[in-house]
Length: 299
Image (cartoon, rainbow, N blue to C red; front, side):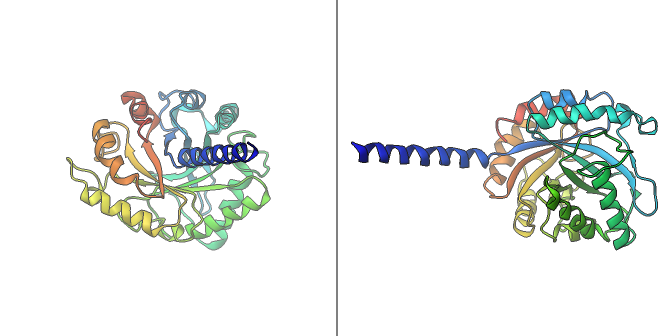
């Protein structure tokens, strides 16, 4: 009898471990929030239950001697320090287990890293003003963000690897600093390809839109699959997300109808051990279409 009970307990323990492993390999949805004042609050975004990661877009001005400036469109006025009110929302998201990450860069290029010293200074600024450091001028208040997203879309490709290394070292001070990036799907990315070679990035959401040579078009999967395989076999990120716009023409070409994504694209890419889920641009367009709610059970 004792042997039978012991074996049963062992079996149950292994079953629990197996369930946890299977669950841990499921995908999630990352969303960009911050570029439209009509997309609801950050707290509402996290309360929807649709997202695992929220990228705050963007810290759009920094480096090269510029005064760093966050731009959250119609949500708050950084010039009057009004964005500190987001601190409570950030903490509410994190209390639900949702990572909140500051995205630096964006499509309007008012940023650069001019030297190794410049990269160090930007890393110090990010640590003290958005992460676990201390500053009297924290733009988002005392909330400690979970990491930094590199959405670099122009300027120079230099020194982003150094910024990643400097930021990564701050993980030694307690709370881990997650590093993420949003490269374009042609491999390697023109701007952050060198940074990704550091192997320091935890999540990479590849933009499979605005790039016809590697995006989905009318049921044609070969270009997309080849690009996906190249990304997942060549970079050292923990998880790779499939990035697309949440509404037609929201970010140019590359929108994929829900049925096509769930029946064709996801089955073609989910077999990769590096598959992490889906990234959507953006919360405003997702509100228009309900895209995340439609796909979350498939991701």
